[in-house]
Length: 444
Ligand code: PMP
Image (cartoon, rainbow, N blue to C red; front, side, top):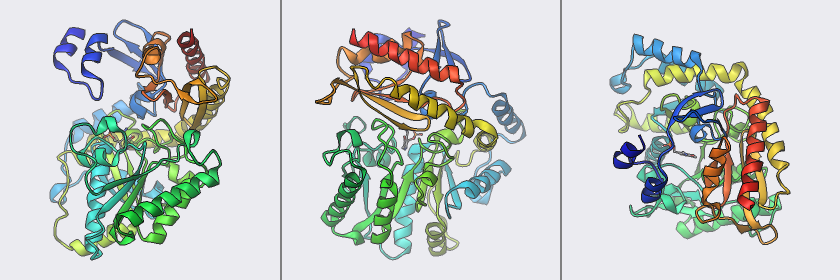
């Protein structure tokens, strides 16, 4: 398998030759929060795949929902006003649970195309409002919004920019709230004030609010290193956008579906965005699916202007009935105990990671619910990053793997945690113990 992989399979992001040198790690099976590799080595999946297997592995009821739907109706397009029962029911169930008036759901295949579609809906919206010159978009440094050209351009991580001409000319960034390294200090109010000032300045630079279509924010920046904004940050940014008449988009691809506690992080932030994007936990990673939620006013404006003419976007697999059937079952699981277990396990995870705070390599511990990170430094006072891309820390991921733990090792020296919400106390204990062992080995 390693030879075949080396010869034929192109992996996302992994550096080409570096990856060929170390060889692929082949996963064979999984149950709950435990993954087994091809050699029989068992590991706790501290990252739920790629922040997605929120329900954990091996849920027979999810498998049953998928196979039932595959037998009954494996495919139905949403084009030509066709539909399937699971897709319609799922849209209704989601609309009922989404914050405020986010009542209109557009299904995609994942997060990138949800973000991509949201940009198009926003363009339709401003055309419908007779303000087509509102065509500039603002997002945040350290943000991640997907791999499509549009999403990669809204993303502010340079790995995802190299070589294909993004960001596009209409995509702008403001600095992140990044509490641990914010030049405005650690005070929440000062950070919020700095973010608001940065937004004001960027809007002015672009040509005023009448040029700006939308602002994108993750409730917690995930791929940028699990950056948790100060309390009130989302609310303040949302209010400022509203004052300018700029649409506010919450990208909940990672934070949605119990990752931070509730079904949607926005409800904890006490905001209702104009648009919300989700994926990952929607189907718990068992099958691909994402979605865009549009508020009544955004959907209504587009629909009224379009009248009976077609709105030009969609995918062959939009609202796929098997994905919808899986999502309906996953939603049921969240509500009969998974969300509650995630809250309990999340508190344990944060307490456990906090207990590592005095380790010489740990500069910062942060997170909310089952989304957490520790930031590694070589000098705590100077906050000198321990870049995982470089020796001696490069092998942290491999070291954790040997110790029976899957974590995310960000090149900036951040270790990310997003375990399945089904984790037991002993799963969380294993995550903490194996992290401590890995840090000690890194220090040695
Ligand atoms: N938005 C955010 C906030 C994400 O974290 C991701 C994926 N990590 C995406 C969009 C893109 O999702 P996908 O990989 O499913 O296309």
